[in-house]
Amino acid sequence: MKRWLCGLGLFFALGAAPCAFAQGSFGPYVPTPTVIVERLLDMGSVTGKDYLIDLGSGDGRIVITAAKKLGARGHGIDIQEKLVAMANQNAANEGVADRVNFVRGDIMEADLSQASVITTYLLPSTITKLVPKFLAELKPGTRIVSHDYPISPLTYDKVVSFDLEEKIKISGTPLTVIYLYVIPARVNGEWALSLTAPGAAARTLNLRIEQRPESIAGSIEIGGARFPLRDLRVRGEEISFSYAAGTEGSVALRGTVKGAEMTGTVVSSPSPAKNWIAQRR
Ligand SMILES: C[S@@+](CC[C@H](N)C(=O)[O-])C[C@H]1O[C@@H](n2cnc3c(N)ncnc32)[C@H](O)[C@@H]1O
Image 1 (cartoon, rainbow, N blue to C red):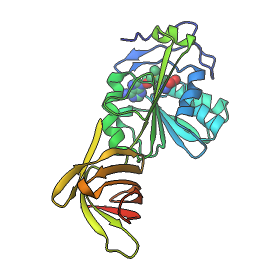
Image 2: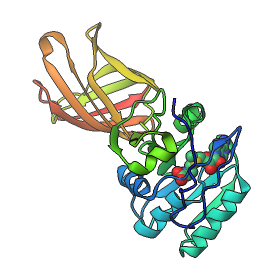
Image 3: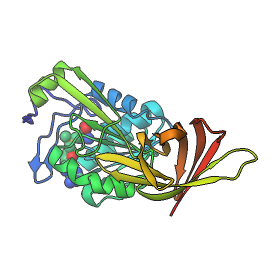
């Protein structure tokens, strides 16, 4: 179990104020070292088109850096009034108060629907409680970047780790881990899948997908038999999978999910099918 220490030598990069350690039911305040802020934004592929929300925003450094260096917009939410005031002051000092702001509130009650990127540096006990909220409120494709802690039970899309001396006084080890999650489109349920070929009648098959926060699986019904989907992957609005249906051979599909419809191309198939469309039943 990591220890949360806030060393006297820890200073805010933006405000040059000493670390304000406060721990209540909401957990401790420990600012992310500046070099890691850059890595978090890089991991989230943040650009000027993004709206970033930092959950538990401290002195505002992540949102402020995203605005100043990358032109992003965003806001931060923190339970501690003093930190919120400091973050708004830092935003003004850094000349980005027109694009970012900080509000006092409980992240469990915050509206996250505006975000294209979420950043967190929260203890596992807090972050795990946010999972149902993430899945209910965030748009498919929204990236979540978590500093040091995985978001159980979600499956991460990417993870990087490296050593940073500065972390020893924070967590007792130089090890830093950054996790990236991409909110998948909601595909759980039954779908009518039609494979289409030029000049031929469409063939409609029953597709079933079982999507859970920690796993995804599916099957397709052909001629009364069910065949498992292979390599089923949903990343944001993109979906891909394949199946091998007995003597029909192997079929691979790739497509895009838009609400109750998926459309895409047939990547490989022994049949002349070129495109596919699936509608939620
Ligand atoms: C480890 S600090 C991270 C600060 C900042 N995100 C950073 O990386 O520099 C965690 C912050 O989350 C805030 N926090 C914890 N639980 C919260 C909650 N339920 N609602 C709002 N803020 C919370 C704390 O006040 C603290 O400022």
